Length: 127
Image (cartoon, rainbow, N blue to C red; front, top):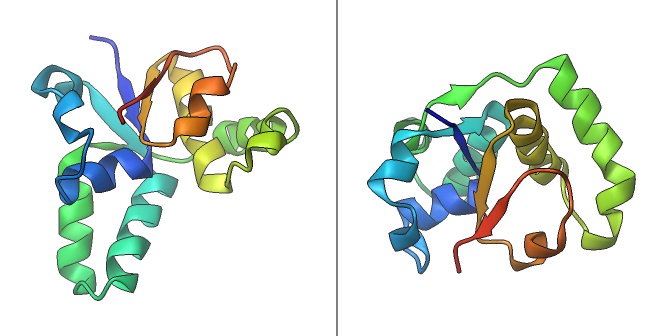
């Protein structure tokens, strides 16, 4: 089984039934993981929108298992800062990519600018 990494935007597309959600098939979701950094992003977004923090956590956590953010991921995310700066990637974005690179996994996102990234792993923009 080859893991698929979901960006926070892909998780939110699932939770809010947004366009692109249909591209995240059961087969993809069965292999999906997300960084704990992206889990925090999703949780934060839901809480800011007024969701109960406990319910928001349960909803965010239910989509896919998480991979702990390691010092190696942190180093890789920092290293990506220069090569991705023209795209305005956040720490969360780079953390997602760092996880995918470390796993040799495909990435799924709604961020259209990511289609231009050349980071050594396939990136699928779902809308």
